[in-house]
Amino acid sequence: MGSNGHLTIQTALNTVKQSPSTVDPETQNYLDARVREIWGRIQAQPETYVLTKDEFAVFNLYRKRFANPDADKAVRRFWDHYRGDPRDVGLN
Image (cartoon, rainbow, N blue to C red; front, side):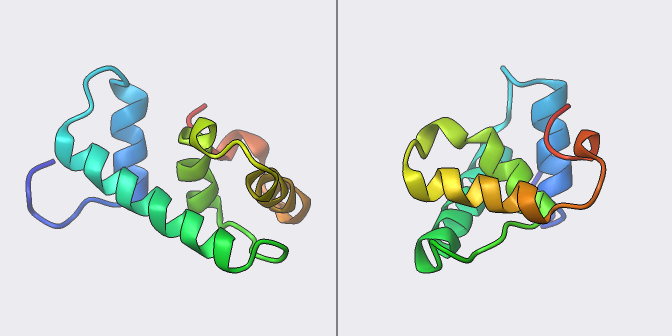
């Protein structure tokens, strides 16, 4: 991506989708930072925080890191509140 500051969740996820085995360090660092922020929000509001579609896509990518009840509840809340097409979520 380069250091142009235009990296977004969607561009980073598209990069991972296109070449999961060769993700550049900048993209990986960007997604790692986003998932830490998202996890912080979930931990701050473990019973009520509802992930956005983009947050869910990032969190789902790193889901194995968060094998605990708070993560399970956050995923369940996302699906309970999501009204879009499930095919529009994640790395399908």
